Length: 349
Ligand SMILES: [Zn+2]
Image 1 (tube, rainbow, N blue to C red):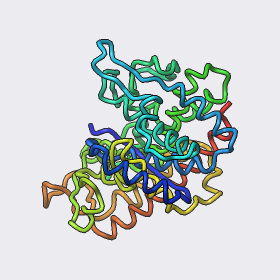
Image 2 (image 1 turned 135 degrees about the vertical axis):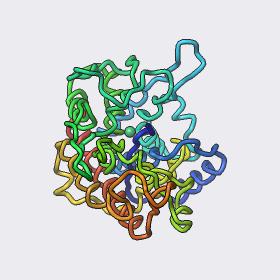
Image 3 (image 1 turned 120 degrees about the horizontal axis):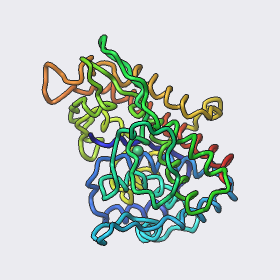
């Protein structure tokens, strides 16, 4: 199935010099080959960074410097780490801007390890109740950490219990690890996973799976959509499934290319309400996503079945649907970023 990615968010005041250097960087970067997800995650990190305490920022950067470049056994493949993130930075950034962009880039790492040489699975191993926590020597990419499959049905289908471990249980576990006295080598791994998963669990389709005729829709990955031209041009490459449509709302692009896209999206956001930021239970964050999915995702023009009987190319997204979805994406990114900052400020040792 198509990977489930997540979200973004914001903050204020990128200076003109930074924007122009990012523009130049963007112009000379290779085109993204993957659907977004990266801009959303980087935007969540952008929002969070503005709200981290200064001493916590210093600690975070110390940990990010540990993220290694991973190589497969015959040396034919590698996964970028801190050294490559630095190499990919646009020129002309201040030290603090560099740190911001490194923190944003780090949020995409858990997606960069998918479909490489690690063991991929979107289904938790049977009878697993507790995950190993061994850092960068882990040989699995843990696809099932990226979402919570809270199930509901649009017909009378019976639905399964929510599988575990999932994004919510894993955020709780990782949060306790970064508050512990474990080695920094493992803590660096736990921190960048937290950056990613707090974003993911705020994407409405990362909190839900809809059943119809006894089958789940993989969080909207099995629901084809098509876009009218006016909406299509707001996306770099038009998403073809409902899940990708929601993933791509904050922008798209490979991790380095998405940085300025994410900064622009995140910089324009309204701050999340303090009462919402105060909620610290990741299971509640996922439940909010499910509620939003029922209210704003699986509604007209999206029908009850995954496929559109009138058109094989999918449900035609309307302007009203798009406008509501975009506002939801902005709200969820702003909230995810604020919650991520609070989590790191209060737990990272
Ligand atoms: Zn993800």
